[in-house]
Length: 286
Image (cartoon, rainbow, N blue to C red; front, side, top):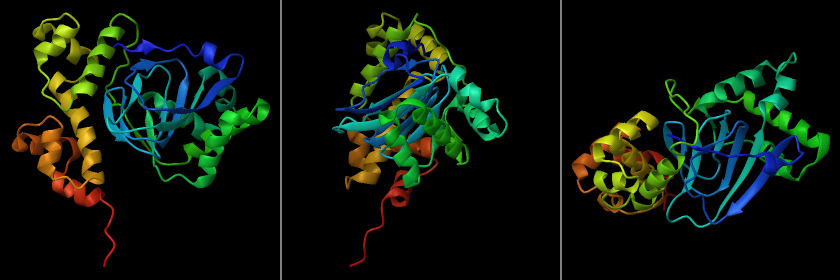
């Protein structure tokens, strides 16, 4: 997938790195990359995120560290209103001044692993959240020291790689507008039938050429990508609503329960009913 290069020079100005608390109506699809590392904490909101060739649902408490040049986007659930996130971006040159020193081996290892993107447990201690909240408001040397402390503490925690080991980051601007157009369309229309012909026509390709293009860039077939988007929405609805499994499946673009059950089990390793029982909060006894 050809993502868009995001230039952060203007954003951070003369600061050693960029840190901000984002508050906006929602996250729209914006497939992009940048040469800086990025640490994101989702304070409020839900939807799905794409990091390299990984697509997963996210919700409040989501912590992700991305390595330089790794394409990514966060997309709000269609029913979500209002999101908040703390985002920190810092350069390799800045952090290397510390990781080359004795005693920073765990941080260096953390940053090395982030080339695939890293997801951390949502159950972070309150002191870590406090540091993350304060960082955008802090200036001078204290700000830099807080960043180093934050990375040190994260380096001691368990994490899960996101992009697959064989994922190859593809950057450049040649096809960025076409891919963003296609993926935005899929996100907005995932609940409805989406034909290969109509999506291919968006970027003036034949269905055959589009399939080759999509698989070569994303590592996924078009249908597999669409199913990833749908299943991300369905997983959230299974946890948060009382709609029947059939109602949820049909409302998210599946017209066959047999096919839906097969896809869901493949994506989550669980049948829908077992997934709901495992992830729904326990009901208080009467």
